[in-house]
Image (cartoon, rainbow, N blue to C red; front, side, top):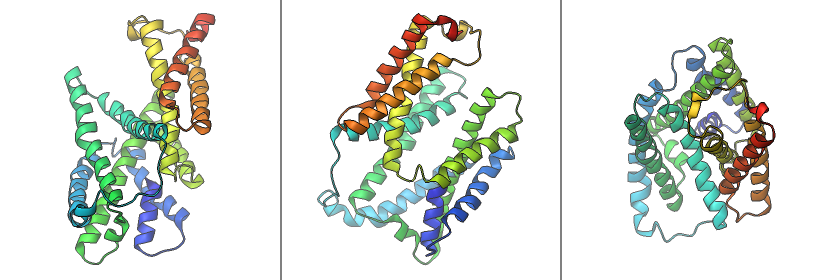
Length: 301
């Protein structure tokens, strides 16, 4: 999202170079509230969501409605294998799903958790994904909408920056919280800086510039996590959950099963585009984890 913000701002200002400098400046500004403990991922999002509703309304009125009569008739560039389409959809779902899980951790009851999930997916995620589909079908360039003159394009540009700011703020806060759990002795500011440096490395290395590839990568990496959790809860812990204590802090078997399953599922997608890699990752991770539990239970603690 830092790269996206930098790219949009440079295009709007008709600047051909300086992407890395923009990434550095914007990344530091986006990370500052978390590092300084001003925000933990909620205050900025509370402002960004209604702003994006306004943005969506303007896009619909100016881009979708005028093209409505021919919206579904225009040609799209290229076609996807069905399996690849499923993997892309699952990868997008997984990205949002991890964030919903981070929010649900703050719920006090099961009903609140269900409500938070419903709001996160049905009322927050799904409408904007549908809006993106409609923008693509209308063959519209939203950046052109932001490049016009007057207060409306400037307001829309501010909304886009605020939305990306909110995503970065929430993701960095949740990543820092998780890292803090692994390194409880480390001060919060140091943990947040480390997470920021990792994010900056990904931004500068251009690894996540291809959203299509990134969602496929997520579809290969995230499902094995679920496979390990399912096998651990239903088989290893016999549905007793965390009432069964571990003697070691890090579950090495889980990490090994995750790596094996993620690598094989990603390789299977690379070789066979029609294969549903999420299902492969879940099954492989569960089997590898249970095999390790049977062979070396001491390593599980």
